[in-house]
Length: 271
Image 1 (tube, rainbow, N blue to C red):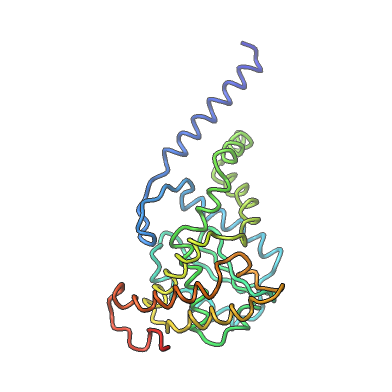
Image 2: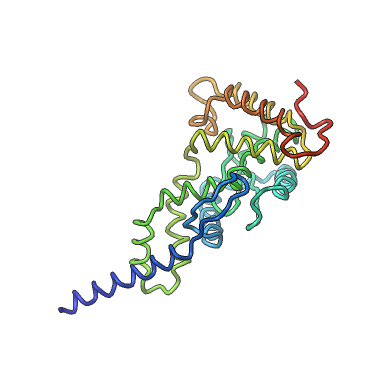
């Protein structure tokens, strides 16, 4: 066997071994947010590393808002919701992005970004909580990492392994390469099923955190009003129709006392 063939054969064996170890280390886990067992390829430490890399790109592209009081409010509301999230294996971080677009999005590792353009459309803490609870819902249901996981796939993981053979730090390489892909997907669409699920979880977390559930309806109505015309908010361009979401949220609010079992005086929908 020639030297070139031996090297190729060794590289193939290395790739096969690493991929086997990587996949074997993954687990089918029960997700309390979805009530299902799910196969997750990317473990939490990789996810957090990806989030840190993506954060650097977001800061470079958009910039963090200098409005410190509003940023502190966002963090205060977000942390109150994070405490009741079904997912507690990482820390949640909330950032106010200095951009006039009406948008909010989540990246791997529990990082949630809220644009000043959206914040300026909302009048109360309950309305702000509605957006953040929806995004925390995406985190808890692992929608974010499952979307990136599907985009990365084994082919990208394999390419990474071959390119990082001499690095000696596969985890670092995975996070860096994944971040490039994840940045492109940060504001891409979730499925309608995922959006409705995040709304349901948003109602749950608002309820458990003690926010007025009217805030969810009011926020959706604001977004519905802003969604007409060619300048529809980024957050809505590929999401389910807002009236359909409002209808589903109204039904979820009615079920909240039954599902989550505590006195809801002042919390359930007033309409």
